[in-house]
Length: 108
Image 1 (tube, rainbow, N blue to C red):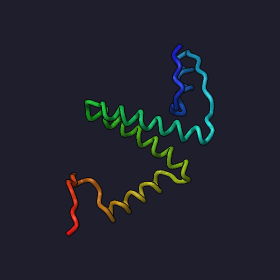
Image 2: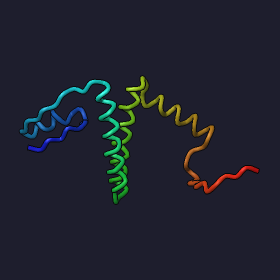
Image 3: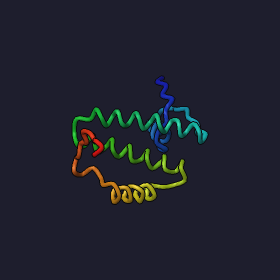
Image 4: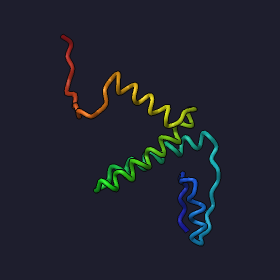
């Protein structure tokens, strides 16, 4: 029987049971959740980096967004709060639409 020891989506135990299998899980303490969330973010980022199609890339980006939403709750916010901050930063500093690659900066 495989041992996973990792954070999974809320419905995974239910899906495993519906497939006629048994699983063991537990609810994480807040500090554990934060640690495991970070691990899961790294895992999903690696999966995004290894995608070979737009559909697969979008699937992994959706996973990352779900994790970002979960992480926001740790910091007392939600996705809307993060989106507001993102918009404010985009207005002040721009976004990444122009694909600018900074080479160097010198004092005048």
